[in-house]
Length: 145
Ligand code: 5GP
Image (tube, rainbow, N blue to C red; front, side, top):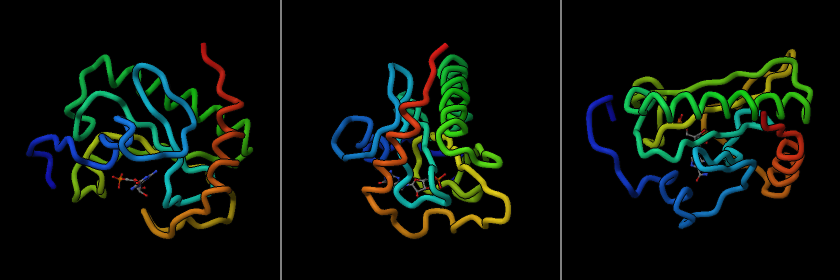
């Protein structure tokens, strides 16, 4: 799907936002829901999903984008405290040719460690107990301003 097109209310993240599909939650408020990526590129890979129904960053309202970016920062700081990575990648893919596979806008927070290569984007499914354990550790470190 390119940058043109219509928002599909049946996409997987819309279903998770509605509570029609489960997720391993890290954080939620009126603006975003953050949960563990079930095909993580590294342990602790979190997705921050704005509640606003936009397919990509370009379609977001300025207010929703501002709110989402602040939450990416808050949750990234919690990832740093909880998992002590050497670095953190924050990414957002807009449009299939850019790497987007789920067409409800979202931000990736991926902890990186020296010398460790990333798993493929959306490859092997994580162990659910491990995801819940990581989500609990990250959630416990979130500090709201
Ligand atoms: P994109 O490629 O669109 O930037 O990223 C979509 C991400 O969503 C991928 O990293 C993929 O692993 C993740 N993902 C796809 N389906 C599900 C799902 O049902 N639950 C969760 N938690 N993550 C998903």
